[in-house]
Image (cartoon, rainbow, N blue to C red; front, side, top):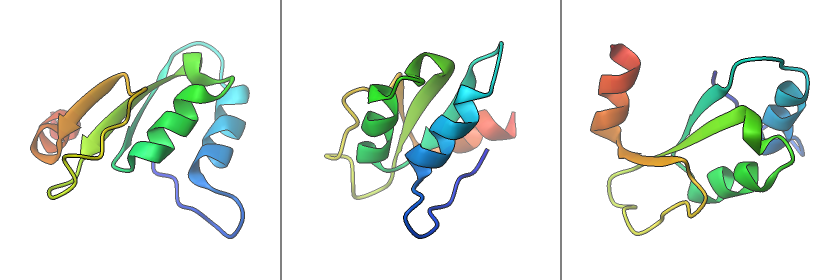
Length: 82
C-alpha cells in the first residue's frame, strides 16, 4: 500500500481510516519518514499495522523510535521484490 499526502489529509490520517475498517490480518507499512512511523504507532490503530522504518541514505540519524523494525533501502528492495 502506498499513501500520498493530499491537502490536510496526511498519510497517518488516511492509514488510520483504512485500518479502522480492516479486520483480521496485520498490514505491513513501509515508510521513510521517522515522524510518520512514530505518529502511526501512537494511534489507536497501531495494533493493526507493522510499521517498518526504511532509512533513506543520508538520514541514518533520523530514527523512528516506535517502529516495529528499521531497515535500509537495500533491505526494503530485497523484501518487496521477493
